[in-house]
Length: 388
Ligand code: ADP
Ligand code: MG
Image (tube, rainbow, N blue to C red; front, side, top):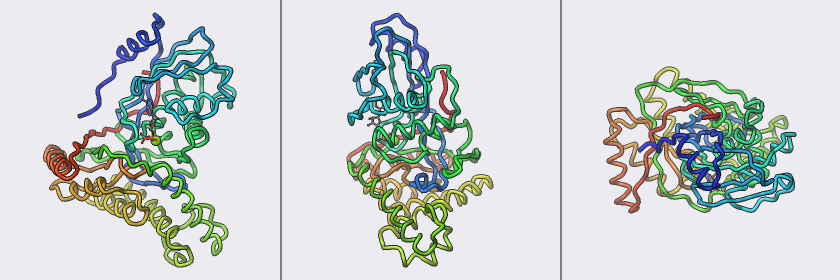
């Protein structure tokens, strides 16, 4: 159910076997995350509310004499090598190693020297499921390449984001990398994506958080993500005609939006309505968490899902089915899709005594409907990136 614990020994053995070396690497980890609420609000400079997971990406690194960065990922069973003198001029290749090379390139551009090294990667974060295996990979690579060198945590997060948006080519917000850096055991991270400050908010103890993997990821994801970014910009442009000081959807309170929404063309209007209401839901969710009000937290989950389903239009048949099935199970406070969309995972607030009936009911119904067995992840807030 929960991911395999990776003892540093396992990755060290793999490192030595793969690279046929007796060198002892240093091991770093960076977690994936599950976003509890606040979807697609990060690039609109609103609030998000993720927890870092105990599922993490591990990177073992040791200096080498061959003049290259040799990067091996067990998860894709592939190796890529690049001369360290060519890092800065490297071009994206639309491959998994773009994430790693993108990070190395960002480090070089801020003046960090990258010496030749062997790098071995093992991740527990399922890729492409909305739990941010990409940020876990970027941030674990960044801390590994930094070694002991000092860099502000926020700068590490920003550098990972730049690697993903500028090099990999995914115009992502800051949430995933931020959560991977600033994760905290026992708490969610309320991030203000404009000021880039955060607050830790404790999650009530009498609830369990399950991510449920639909095991389906629709290809549409990346192009639709770009479309949503552009549609939000179109909404801002239309609003600026009336309110010139508005810079992002973060600047538009719900009451103002209600007054002027007719001036925004239909599709951008629906996207803006999601983003603006979702930003408010993050604040309401944090207040409900602080008040131990699980019913209200669950209500906000469902409202968030409906907003993604009907206004942002980023859910899928499988995901809607998982949510609709979950919220009928007794003891489930709420369910919603988490992550970028078009498949991936839902996140569920579950009364502890209902955990097994929840898994049973969802597995049976999903198998019957789609002939797929969903995976369950018991999400416990964990610490952010660092040495192991
Ligand atoms: P998510 O971040 O939700 O898991 P993304 O599409 O953003 O989904 O990132 C998934 C991609 O990140 C994978 O397709 C792969 O290219 C890369 N990736 C993540 N983890 C690993 C890994 N352990 N080894 C190699 N590539 C990885
Ligand atoms: Mg990602």
